[in-house]
Amino acid sequence: MNAFDLSSSPSLEIEGVRRAFGETEVLRGVDLTVRPGELLAILGASGGGKTTLLRLVCGFERADSGRILIGGVPVDDASGRRRIFVRPEKRGVGYVAQDGALFPHLSVSANILFGLGRADRSGAAADRLAAHLLELVGLPAAYAARSPQTLSGGEQQRVALARALAPKPRLVLLDEPFSALDAGLRAGTRRAVADALHQAGAAALLVTHDQGEALSMGDRVGVLRDGRLVQVAAPATLYRRPVDAALASFVGEAVLLEGWAQDRTVRCPLGEVMLAPDCGVRTGAVQLMLRPEQIALDPNAPCRATVETISYYGHDAGVVLRLAEGQRVSARIDGGTGHALQPGTMVGVAVIGEGVAFPVAERHEAAVAEAGAAS
Ligand SMILES: Nc1ncnc2c1ncn2[C@@H]1O[C@H](COP(=O)(O)OP(=O)(O)OP(=O)(O)O)[C@@H](O)[C@H]1O
Image (cartoon, rainbow, N blue to C red):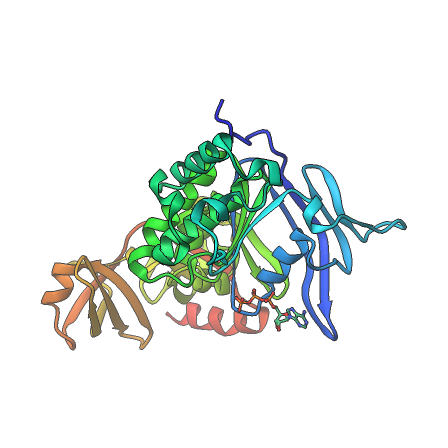
């Protein structure tokens, strides 16, 4: 077994946690479980309470109510009569900050071993441990003697992860760990960090405002909104089956159209669109949600639209189409086809696959029903 195989490490449980600063309630009842060995990404807007959540788990903040358990052991319990609060250094949690926060006056190796007891920080065993951790995060063992300033930002973040893993924590917390990296370094560093965490078997909670990061790294992704987790699901489920229209737009680009649902189809300005079987929508006024890659240009399609704008990205292109009834929809199409398009061109528009529908509030329902009956 790998010396850093922590797959038996227990998970994190957060139960009904609330935290306010003055009058502002930042977390309003958060419930979450991180399974052993799982990388769970929390996606939320800036100022939404992501860092506060991590600080609560670390023990840098205290919950106003609710409980936090690490490995089944309560570390912060404000739910009962007896207040429990375990100090940060006793929680067995590793932390990777936004900028890595490496000590510039220490070597890479000394940084990695910093969190260990004095006796474990020197000698042949310490050197082997540093080399092993460097290998785990995908860096050459020769980096041990280097100074952090001589490393790229992405390499520094890998060293920060190696440091967080050195004391074999039960849980690693990552607070927007790639936000300071440029796009070129970000993708590779994300992959290296996710691989190292999985190899170490460490459970991890990562917070980010970057949906691409959350979807690509998380085994599951939770969306924090208005102080609550509105959905926690596998990345593909979150993308394909968001629980509401606002979440659909927050997690990727969404095409939202008003329509009327009946018998697993929605009648909308794009024609009749099939609904996913697990959509669970009853007959009535709905907002139909499709993703831009589900909107295809098809000369034979009866639904017609005018090309308004084309954004060419090379491998693909984003096209804004105006339907006959005036609604705008975004399509993501093949780059070559997009390059050949001209604004003002009339095209046929078809839908690929099934949509998801959200019931609209009752006050809209009457108006949409009326429009549906008239068409
Ligand atoms: N110690 C504090 N005292 C008062 N207000 C605080 C404190 N810590 C956080 N807040 C406030 O709580 C809210 C949430 O902050 P937090 O840092 O948790 O958000 P975030 O989602 O991590 O944001 P970002 O993505 O911008 O880092 C903010 O409005 C912030 O100003």
